[in-house]
Amino acid sequence: MSSASKRIFLSARLPGFTGRGDKYLGEIAQELRRVLLKTQNTFVYPACQLPDAAWSDVAVLLVEWAEDVHNDIGLWRTVETHQRRCFGTPLPLIVNESPEVEPHGFDPLRIRFFLWSLWPCFNPEQVLSPAHADLKRLAEAASRLLAERFARLPRDSGVTRFLASPNEYGWDMVEGRLRTETWNNEGTSRSQLILVCDSVQFVVPEPRPQSPSKPNDGDEHEHATPPAGGEADGRPPF
Image (cartoon, rainbow, N blue to C red; front, side, top):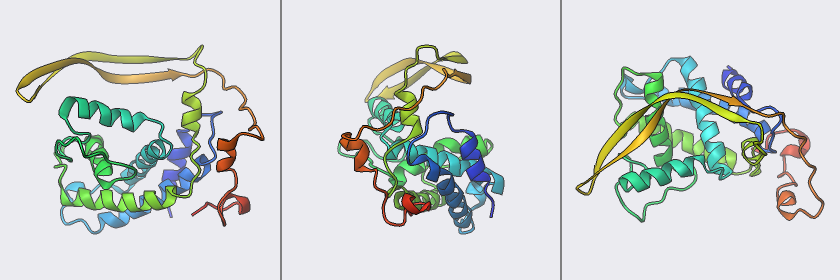
């Protein structure tokens, strides 16, 4: 079985910042790739079919998205908050405008929107409907696996630790262009200036040693005891 997803995932991790759940994410990406490939075999239409190699990247992106949601890092929450402010719904074209609708966790609706947003990167010639039946199949299959696997992982991510680290000497270099985006909301014309990013380079300071946990740190030790059959015996907790 291919381990391309695991290699891709591990190669993109930030050096020097590791959470307790990070070591399992590559294996989840590898397993998710197999599930996505199996789901592709059930597709009714060719629109959602991708080359086998592309599913490795899709699996890695989904696991990174799930890492953000599981650890409440806030990246995806910011996306949904911005979309609700602009369009009245956290998931445009997926969820109707409704102040009561608030997706949570690994909701298939969230995953379907995420996949639909990514699709032009993998098949730029294909205009895919967000309501496509095969896209729904993919989202539901991914949702089931991610919910099951992440349920037993500690909420501790290297990304969270990186974002919480000092940024005294680090900076981001962005190249792009400005564009005005205009839309109508309940009869009112609105516009905003956005940056279309062409490339980003992150300059990261040397990581500082991670401080050991204090014995009386309740939150840290809340997850310190691995579940049965988990970290204690070297196996994933799922």
